[in-house]
Image (cartoon, rainbow, N blue to C red; front, side):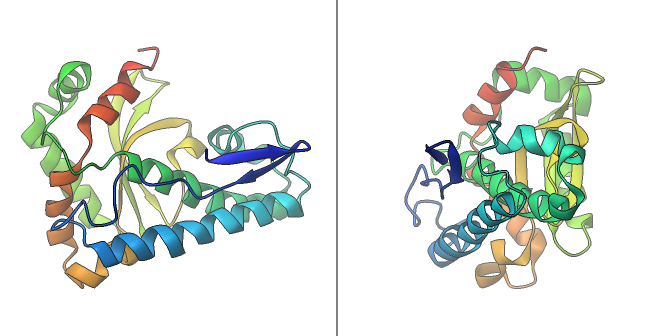
Length: 215
């Protein structure tokens, strides 16, 4: 479970990984996975719980993605911290789920068809996505999202821990390009990390997320 409810007080918890820390080797190294999950993600969990408590929102009945979608309804005093820590929590939760040691390497089914329509094939999609990821200045994320307004998939980037939910877009696949996600193995070679990451994308999970949308 990602959060527990005790006496109507919601507390978020660090989600368990769906694989071992060493199982994404050699593409994502064991040491990075341990630090990224146990230290960085845990810090977002703790920060989110503290931020909600500070605005009296620990009993908020909605999950964090819904809170982020309505971020302007959060008291201004706590909006920035909930945006940061809530985004960090949910971005990472999805990041772990969209990787697998058993990647098939490319999408299939409905999501594959949508990628063909909007990006003129999977290889072109990979090229555009990788270029967008490498264009991020500083820390941030690159995303494949579903845009509800226009009923289409698209690629966007966000800075720091900003979530696509804040701009009313449903994240399907996200790549963390903060240095802590790759620096131990790839040092400053972000392009090598991005290229390696494609080998562990969980296209079954991404495809299922897309199939569940009211497209």
